[in-house]
Length: 366
Image (tube, rainbow, N blue to C red; front, side):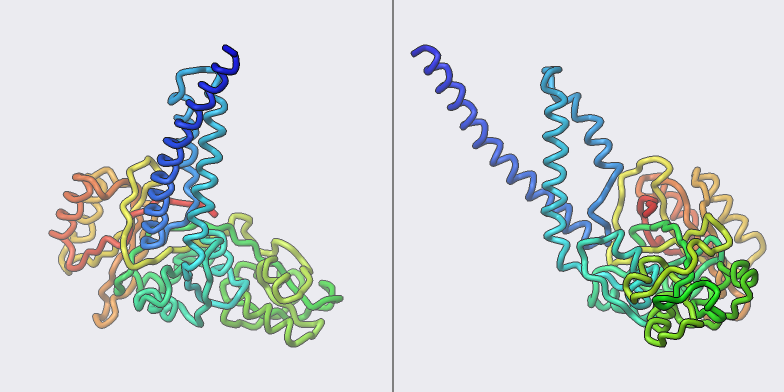
């Protein structure tokens, strides 16, 4: 009888604890919903590997009983997985704009960053950007630079003149492949079509194989055209993912000259996030035009250095409407949301005709 009494007592305690845990679980998931809504507003993805690693590293310290620590770590992992599953359900209504057609590198980047969301193609960068401004989509993912072909001026201009914020920069490795219709082989191809940047990235391969080229609007559009033409002598330069979408074979893989080819995509949305400072992966972007006076640019660069910000990236672009004047698009490493950042922006305004904080985010690779 004593044993039965002890068992009943333990089960009663477990039931009471389960009731408390259910209440805490509901509270936690409601906070996960708040996080998901924040991410949707600010164009952030569900995955946050650094946050997860930090949670797992600290999980053991929360449990006093050493025998139970490993089980609590597992419990936390399952809880985070449930939280992400819930956020994915909430993200299903999210709409992501990109430029091109299905299979374009921007489309691939959008799917990697927001696998749960609906991706919507637009024919050019401006229309994708404007769709986000107007609220037709939640986020626009647009390329700002390729490590081989350089910056994408139109998108930098949109960041300077527009109203959206950059809440993430995604670095994605780009691998160009030669695609052809089913049954063709490399020797059949005498002409390829693709985006100008893809052609430049693959110029050595084309020259070595005496293949002519024609330019088109995007790599994915080239693959679509080749599929529709059905000509064994015409190939496309595009991603391997594109081959499966349009029913093509891969004639040759990794034909880009540089093995370290990357494109940087900016994730634009209508509001700006403020990530907690977290070391070298915390960055922010500013666009600015200095005053037309001697030493103005040098003064701006000195202000950047004096506040301890490392400049990761800077490009100059001509200002529309004023001949020979330029603005600058710069990505800086560090936190701009604290007192140091506020003072930095204040000082920059003293030497700039125009200054805008475009975004604050964590650097990511996808």
